Image 1: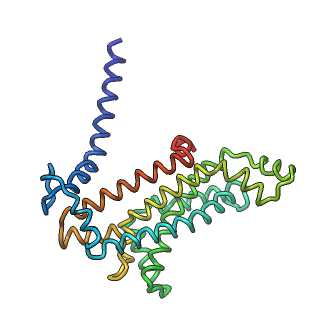
Image 2: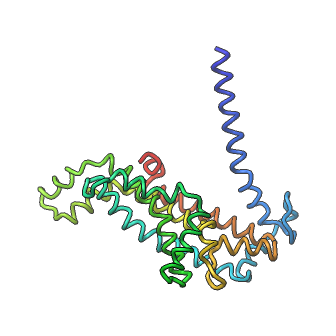
Length: 265
C-alpha cells in the first residue's frame, strides 16, 4: 500500500514543479511591471502604474501592437475560411490523396520558423513582392492555416454528414442545413483553432523578423528593439497586458463554447 501512495505523491510533486517552472516567469514579469524602479528588479521596489501609462508614449509600441493585431485577425479570418473548406474537402474525400494533403498542410508547424522566414523572404524577392505588409500577411496565413485545419479535421472526424442530408429532407436548403447542423457541431474546433492561430500569429517572431521593414514592425520585434535600445519596465507592462488579454480570450471562449468542449475535440 505504501508504494502506490509514494508514487501518487511523487506525481503531485512533479506536477507542482512543472507548474512552478511554467508560471514563475509569468509571475515575475507581472510583478516587475508594477515596480517604481526604472530598471528591471525583482522583487519589485514599491508599487506604481507609471509603466502602464508610459506605454502610450513608447516609441512605436502602440502602432506595432495594432499592426500585430491587424495581421493576426486578417490572417486568422482567411485561414478560417480556407482551412475549414479544405478540412471538409479532405473528410468528404472530394480530392484524391486527402491524407497526404492533411499532412502537408501541417508542415509549417514542423519546419523551424527561421527556415520558413528565409524561404518567404527569398520567395517574395523572386516574384517581385516588395511590400512588407503583404508579404507578412501571406506568411502568417501559411502559419495559421494548420491550426485551423487540424482542429476542424478533429471535429469533422466525429461528425455524421448524414445529418445534413436529413436536414435537407426536412425542408432545409443546403446552406441552411450546413448552418444549423454542421456549424454547431464543429464550432468548438473552429473556435479553438482560431484562438490558437491568432495567438501564434500575434506572438510570432522568427518568421516576421525576416519580412518587416523600418515602417512595418510587429509587436514582438518592437519589444525586442526596445529591450536593446532603452530597456525599462514598459516592456514588462506590455507583456502583462498581453497575458491579461489571453486570459480574457480564454474566458470569452469558455462562455461562448466551453473550454471543456474545446479541449475534447
